[in-house]
Every structure is written in C-alpha cells, then in structure tokens.
Amino acid sequence: MVAEIEGSGGSATFRLTTLSDLESARELVEWANEAGDGHVDILINNAGVAWLGPSSAATEAEFDESFALNVKVPFFLVASLAPAMAERGWGSIVNVSTMVASFGQAGMALYGASRAALELLTKAWAAEYGPSGVRVNAVAPGPTRTRMMEAVPEEMVNQLAALAPAGRVAQPEELAAAIVFLASDDASFVHGVTLAVDGGRVAT
Image (cartoon, rainbow, N blue to C red):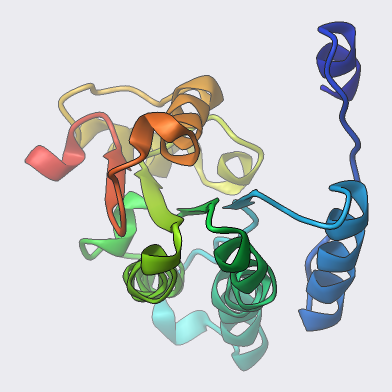
C-alpha cells in the first residue's frame, strides 16, 4: 500500500503494531505525531478482537482482552489525539464497530458488548470534540472478508450474511469506502452517527 501511494505521487509510512495494551497505544501516538510532522488529522480505530463462544465459557482473561483492545485502546488513542485536532479546528475520527453491537447474537456477547461501548463513546466524543471542529463517527459492518472473519466458522458467517437483504458477505473495499466517506469533508455535517454497512440488516 505504501508503494502504491508513493507510486501515485503521495507520501506514506507504515508501522505494524499489535495495540495489545495502553503502552503500545501511546507508542503509536508518538510515532504517528512524528510521522505526521507533529500532528494527526484522521484517526481510524479499526483494531479489534472478536472472542466467540458461549458466555459460560469465557475466561476473565478473554473478557479483559476484549475490552482492552476494543474499548480501552481506542479510548486512549482518542484522548491522546483529539485534543490537538480540536486546537487546530479540524479532525476526523472513525470507529469501526459491528452490526452485532445493536442486536443480540448468540456466541457474540463479549464482542457485541465491547463494540456497543465504542458506539456510545462515538456519541460522547462527538459531543465533546464536535464544537471544536472534530467529527467523530462510526461504521457498523456486517460480515466482511477480513482477517478477523477468517477466525469465525463459515457456518456462522453465512448465517449472519443471510440475516440481511443483501444476503452475502461484504468485501473489505465496501467497508473502506464508507470509512473514507466519513473521514472526508464529504461528510462535513455528519457527527456522532453509526453508519450501518451491513447489507441492510439494520432494516430488517
């Protein structure tokens, strides 16, 4: 991707990180500020973990990991980066949630609950930073052919896809297009929303 951007005349840099804890999030903030000549204009909170299975089988460690990566890390990334965006009077934050944050799905209690928390944070941050020119929104995808989805049993993927009018699994590019829209000035009057990119599941 870096080579593609540079080949088109742009500039880009890349850093691989696990974002496994608060320290890794702080290190990423420091690196991003240096890479961005002292500032970050757009933040996409896309990292996450989806623990699947019956609630009775979840361990405390799995619970803590789910909320650490899906809630704590984005919370402190926003807390670290949004104030500087607000000082400059412009910024865009997009949080990646899930369609199962808005309805109950057996085997996805931890994942859905952690992403539902992120959707509430999206609204709170929109209220907090919106008056200073920082837009905060979220997308709630349905099943999408991402690396995370590879860990989900195919039967469950097909079951989730069948819930929506589109009746199929999305391609990553379809989700990316929605994120780009929310991050760009094309969505300049959009604050605090969760955009469903779920093949119409929200309509049924």
